[in-house]
Image (cartoon, rainbow, N blue to C red; front, top):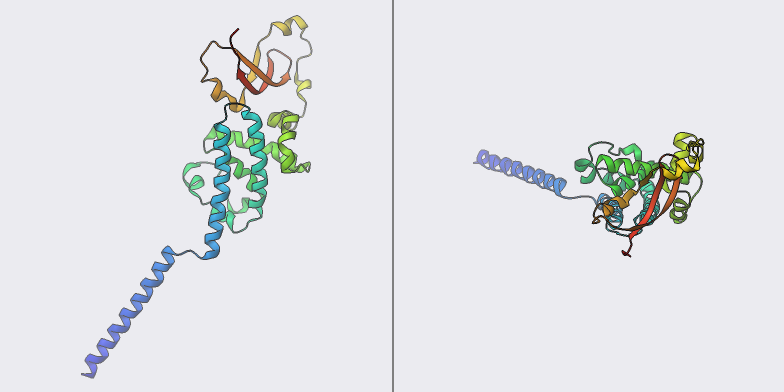
Length: 241
């Protein structure tokens, strides 16, 4: 009788151990510590902010370039906060955008000091072209940050200095656009040459226009040569006369 009683006791203890293990396993699978949960929420907020800025600029028919500058300035401000958030960063880099959508150039744990760079990547998108666009912005932003420019002044300075290309070109080529321009072209030759226009983000809206049509352009003349190169900041459709 005692032997049977002992067997039942042992069996009861074994089941109790199994229940405890199952309970711990269940908790380990489904529960997240409050600290990690808060960090994950912050990481999602950072990502959502960058994505929303991209959607806002993509949906703007007019003044898309100036809106882009403003969005980038806001992302810099937000990215500076992410760079200081040691808990949110590991959560940010494991969000589905990075683990599923992005194929190359994913952020690593040690990349936290360059959080702005990856916020800009999220802002532009996951494609190879969008990655290049994000890189252009990041290079210009690094120059401005090195000069001590604060985020709230960044949009105005980007506009004043010819945008990302205007800031990146001297650093990339080691010369200004005026030094690049051909100097042996006569006025008559220049007047007959073609224009090469860079519409930037506005190109999506340009391709939707029914042609032929009249448009008014506002932008910068970057090179006076053959062809004359201009960068379009904004444009609008004009009424037919």
